[in-house]
Length: 629
Image 1: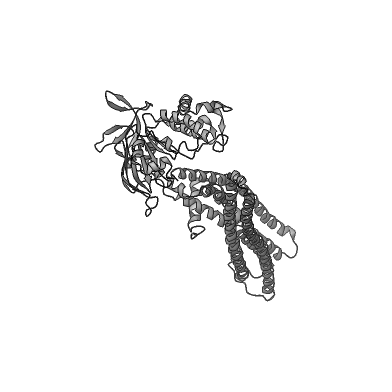
Image 2: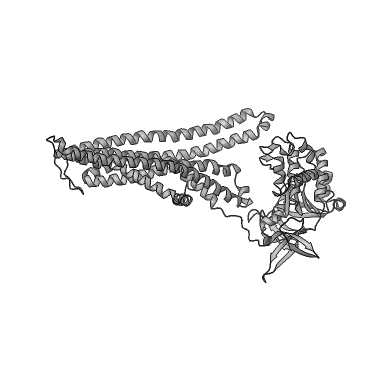
């Protein structure tokens, strides 16, 4: 895949705009302090010239005459230095707050943005790469904001001020300095560019190394079982060696650059001193804004200016890598922020209702009855009782436009019916359930919920009406009670416990060290896979949706536990519309209708008994004449 640019041209402009947005008052004050400090650091040469000029004019040694003038100049310079020190302390302290605050706000903005991204984004991007936005990319901005940008601004102001002072003193001497600086800039561009290139490679290699370590840690049991330790070590050594080579190259160029720049600065200093001496001895006419002739009072301050000039160029060269890496990180962050948010044009909402004399009335409290609230063109509102009637009509879908996955899917599930999907992996079973809650939108056809096109239902309300238990269980850091309550945050402890009893999770939870208050970490690593699945099922039960999707919900549970769960599941499914995906055909025998899918098409449908009598694909699957996988 062709790699895009490290960063876009407007990345810096956009980053600065965001910083001013975060701190609209503090940042301008910081910039003023930086400008003031930089300007003050540039003017000692002017005072030096004036002091030397005073001494040249009074070579007779009349201290009483020149002393007050010199003291006055020194006092003014000392006062400026005191103000510069206060300004420097103020902006460095403020930048610490601005830097950390900006990183905090950027993480918040990034996280809030990700909550609004469609499932497609997370399915198509590696999770490790997504995590790196919050760690590596954000961290590259820390040095850019706190150090590089203030130093670059200070150096730029100092260089411009010094250039103005040099032109004020002598055009010829200025040309000598600029000739040497041109050579220095060529070296900085060459060495700094190479260093930046390898620093970027180092970041990529570092990410690969971290990813490999994480993969080996997660799969450590598999590594041990198959005696793959030597191969794992060899794989790590190869990746680690590449990281070493990239880091070595990056730091080699980075370490060469400062001494080279410093020594070029020394050569410029010597060249300026020699040129000044030649100009002085040959009595060259000086061209300057000040009109001063060549003298010691011009040449000596010019040497100091030269040292400052080259020192600031050296500071800039040391920040090249941090700037490039920071802008690269900012570009990756802006790429995420520019991602299209999940579209939702739904206007029908789900509300609590109370039924009186056959009429539905909206209310705020939870009554156990829900209705779809649909505003009409005449300003009135229509309430449709939530029943759980789901129908798909001639649905076509593909994750990519030119690669269809589902073909002309038509089915219906009336309230309280249990519909099962069976078929080989990749047949389209999970894809159908992804369409029911609009994780993806269909290419053609209709999906209706209680007679309403789901495109008209607001996604958050649609998903409140469709519960789902996935094959891969996700538990969050917190207590068992917190994880069950995740299904409905307003649920009481009693409701959470009732849901656990219903699904058969209560018995094992009460045997945990702290019962429902047992803290789970690492995705419930201290529980068995079956126990984690039971908690996930209880979480769906406490949500109490009229439609339930069970995607291999009992695939990780042993036979004995499955019998316990099945009793709870039967109670949970009572009165609900249920879609079941299962590889264990024993779990779908009591379904009202079984859909057999193959390559995105429904090839058989009917009850268990009817499909057995037809002796088609389902019969082959059930009798073992055909492998499900």
